[in-house]
Length: 272
Image 1 (tube, rainbow, N blue to C red):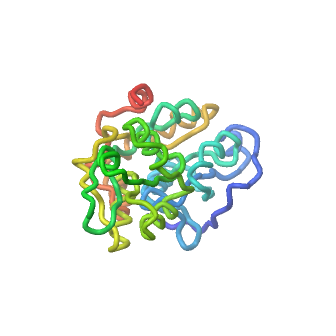
Image 2 (cartoon, rainbow, N blue to C red):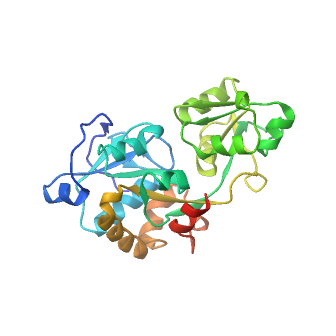
């Protein structure tokens, strides 16, 4: 992904009033809000917005003629509150489009479709593949705050005492590394990234994992910015699956198999 000579700012930036179009008319930046969740989104060494969701957002914004972009790095659970409070203008953290989120912000058209799995100790010694395996063996799991896997585990019947919520992926993987939990329940891309980066980790078989069906991911906007979101979607339509897109996202392990095809934001909001 192209590098932007920008420094990340913390999410305590004071809220600025007005819709995104008004900020642009005043020469302000477009603030991308994301958490450290590689390969979806993360800050580069220079503070620039990296990861394939940021890459897609930056490419599409540039197609729209916008290059004055400011990265805002925060924790996952603060992303939607930061958008609603006006501290960021777009959420590029790589969020599944689910009903609870649709009630709090508007999503772009889908930018990909993905599933979940477990990160487990190398070799998967306890043969964990599903939430039911946790129940049957009285084992524990951890997941970052705000991740759908927390609710999915509850829906599957995993006891509340067996599930730990932590601020982010770093803390979740640290718990697994130090033996304080048996599994980390996250999306398959983050799981694969973790296993690639640390030989003490493996991932369970995504094809055997029983949770949600493949979920679509979108970029979040305030409802007040509907016209900007629609213009973004227009530019996104020509971009999805293009050579430009694949050149941007492939370094962060996005494959053509992840393209959303005919899946829609509207259907995802209704279904989850």
